[in-house]
Amino acid sequence: MKSRSISEKKPVSVIKLGHRRQLVIPRAVCQRLGLHGGDFVEVAVRNGAAVLKPRDVDGDDKLTPEEEKLVHRGEKQLRQGEYILWDDLKKKLKL
Image (tube, rainbow, N blue to C red):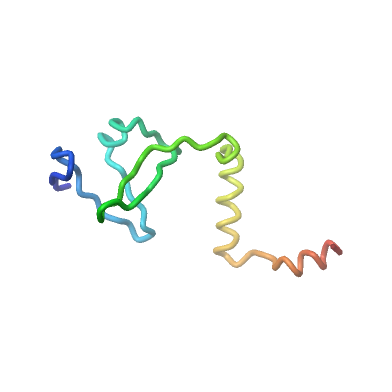
């Protein structure tokens, strides 16, 4: 990774944006911000730069590990074409 300076005049890592727009935040940056896996960050654009800021989220907005597994399972089923339309489900349930 190359380094360059930005507004704080301290070296920062240059990282590559993944195919799905994912970034890996360097360990030193995470440590400096107190970020850990599963934490939330706020993303904003200021003066043409992306700004990441640690963000607390209410407990109601966080998923439990079990809920995260269910979401991932549902996303996988959708990608594989395993789904039912809402109108069809209502008919099946006779709503």
